[in-house]
Length: 347
Length: 191
Image 1: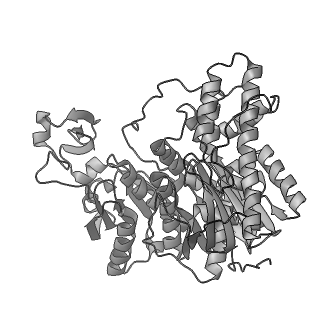
Image 2: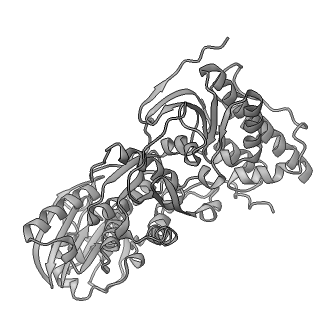
């Protein structure tokens, strides 16, 4: 049954700086009035990965202009903002501290309520933003730093059905792209190369013995690296990229759909940066249709890191009367609020 | 004009309220990893003590470093955000000036210091055994009696503070972050 959620009455400013995106958004009565994302992808590309200190330096440069842009697009002044929601966990501490300090400063100066938001909870609830589904639903949360299968039973009620035992899915994309000389970030690079590749050419390992709801991508990553050492042409590269994408997306989609069977969910979603992958979206969509499941996949701009999802969860929690103190800290690693583990039983 | 100075570039966070160049009230607290918390609590206290509202403050001033990269950023971001919310200008002061109008040294990396010998001079990077440090004030392992940057020492340099819009204020790290170069150059995105 779809749970209706109450939203905070009044515009909520959302701020997100957990990794390499500086983002601000305005949510009014549960509706996204603006969502501005300034990506640092080009800055970090030369290092082949995100450099935390460089990310934090860029955040402080971008933060206020991004907020100004978000307010302008929402046709709002800062004086009209009624509350501030900010990512305070998990993430790169130096990066988080820029957004959190900014949020605290604004909240303190204008006497506004402040709410700290768990970044992964925001991803997990982002499928609700379109209004198509509500809890309970199964959510595949796949990004550069996390890969988890969640049963979202309600806001703040999460059963962890499975998770990666080694690399996150997005990390596997990045490393495979690096092995193939495709550049960074890996997700879009692999997807572009795979468009003209033959996905059936290379047989690659799927990781753990099935059935399982956990993931392991280190063997797949190593197999791609070994195979990549012997490819000779661009066509070979495209075929290997396509085979990698087919393997990882099949594993992700099949286990997500299996999770729906295990918990008896009739609704499914996928969130996080890897959910921007067209092959994964397509596999989940066709699987959901076959099983007659309700499906919600956020638009791509709400799959990658963004402040709209932070404002969304902030608005829900503020409406419940929750507030954070101004001594709120940022935390590098943190379980989901209300997280419980779940031991799946397979028939 | 009323102004507020916030310094969080070192392990000691401090705030100071000024009427012109006269210090009205100040607080300081050892606050590693809790600079924004300490600064906001201190601001509440000193503003109440002075009977001022945040809106009465005409300019918000940050210690822009050098010092702890994260500490500098917290102070600068806090001042930028408060001033942005209140529609007020901001300014930045060097952490050297907040140590004093003398030779001033700030620890920056293992066994290294940024030393500014005279106000207005460019600082230089020196080792912990550099004899010029003996005549300097500052903090770090080299100093038995540390002198941390303090918002309460801003009076002498407030007159020369240049105001800018909050969006324009930036930290003065004075050092690039330590980034190890990839063993194999990272490939450019194939087009």
